[in-house]
Image (cartoon, rainbow, N blue to C red; front, side, top):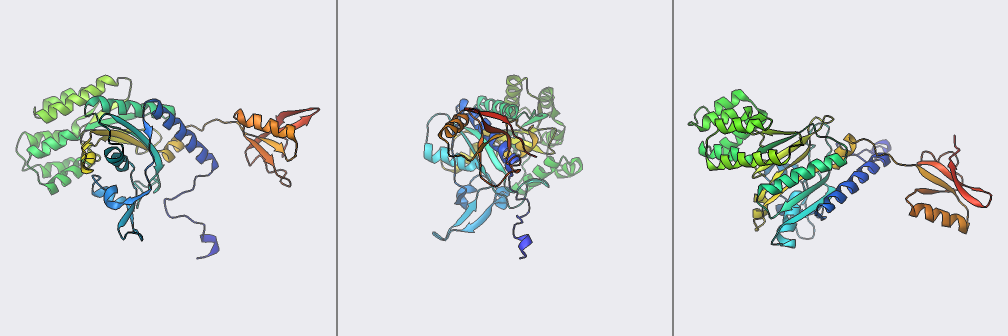
Length: 388
């Protein structure tokens, strides 16, 4: 490899340079502190696990997105995590082992074999919150509210938050008697909102399931969509319960830009109830994903109700307005006790103080300094940095 190409990174893998890294760290601290104030305890799962643990309950899509390697110590296959949520579910199920509600949050890098979209990174910095142990809709409402608060803290107002319910599709697919392969095909067609293909797939399905499946892509909009959907879908307990949950969400969160999409089956093999996705005007895709995933806990041998959401801090840093911050203060290289005391007091007060190593005049602005410490008479004072 030529010398000029040795520094190149793999496709869709990027460094974070100082300004972006600073923005990411500011948002990370802001969000984790907010989660902590709501009772969410921080956990830090490992980057590497046995692959069967990482992929438990996560479905085929996550298998394809996971980097795998052989552990030289055990000979078993390891995976580099592509999603932290199953790891947190494992921690709740087997390490904490609490009887009541557990609120957990996390932040860390994940790796994807391929980027999720054309402009996405293969190394998202995933941050999220999960609530375990409560099966009621109250937990889902808390999680959606916490997501909205997180976006507000990042100064990224959501254009809309789409909310759906996997239970409606599951009930209709079951009543239609569709096989596993037919369900997968139907799932893909509904996600694409391909009306002509949908008509072909359900042509042989008996009523009322056929008409209900055809109506799903049209069940999209504001809260009044739910009342209209109730008239078009079969009045069976599973669908009645799912629509009731969606009504509760709408009533509990009136100030949020909620929309309801009964054909949004994102994470069909992973989620088990309410699902949601937040969108911003500055991004072509969803900036946050979440929902209920009770089966994952059951896959770990301890069936715990679970709901949560995750975001990519890299994407948030790109969308959020730059965080204002003061520049650093340049201090001369002098072995002076009074100067050192002044520097320590400034740093303790939150200022950045950079020591000017000898021989680098004219370069300190690019190092982030806009002020300087200078002795004026008996005192050290701060004045504007004089540098071309």
